[in-house]
Length: 384
Image (cartoon, rainbow, N blue to C red; front, top):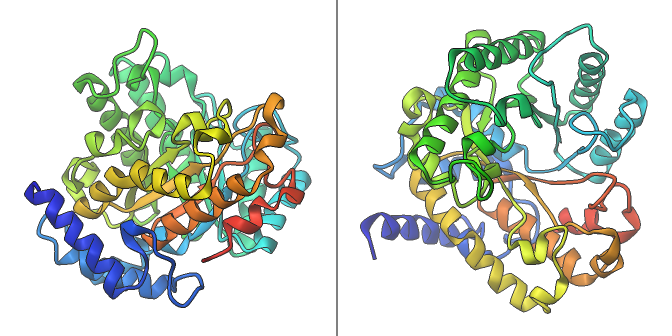
């Protein structure tokens, strides 16, 4: 076994045995309840600090570095401010936020498509601000981002024109929300794709050096704009190929590949997973796994490399999207114990390893807030 993989394995085993938080094997916490966030922060920080390959950070930054753990379990409010699909009225979105808080979620992810410009006087900015303030008032962490920015994803060429526009966008967002508490978190660019690397089409492939360089570059541009305004706002960066779990270790193999060379305790990486697509994708089918036992074994394998990379590098990790999609043809098929157990198993698996996670939800192909009778939200919050 290569030295790095062996080291990662030893860290994983130590976490599982000593912290009783499950690690890569996914054992349930003992006792059967949500792991204490502060205790988990201390355990993970201690383990990571003893790994010579991990960039260290001072204890004075621990409050910021613990944000990604204290976020715990969350939910997306998708196809609202990012894409047409649901009401943008503040009172309607606030009902969704209140529901999430009442169920026991600790954070919401609020995707926003700004189309390249921030205007504080626009109806979009005013509505987003009102929802952010309402959620923070309820004590929730809130993640906002730049979401379907096609002007950038489809045309980026590394030029100053695009970099300046993106820098100004994030400077304006950061300035507008400058006085909000640490409950507000920024995600620089949702799912970099196309010009940043995609699996299909006329684009560079995700593992091409050009794709990796462009992804690092545009994330650094947005990050720098935020840091010009706020030095201690928690920030997450996405790898390319739509924040794929397979590309994270290539775009950011080590903390030194992050902006600031790994010295920023308020910086992490976010990934998305609808893996395997033949099961979890909106065109997938339950028959791909068939049974809960086969599903769990399969998912261990799906997340193995992500575990090895994260624990080996010490990178703060946020699972910003996950879930099981459903098209109209197969809607009722997804109303099953297999799918409910997926949400329970995956949420506990992520949390047992100290990763915050947010299930994707929208009024279309996903059925959490819109279909509470399916009971998915209850399984997301249910420990083993």
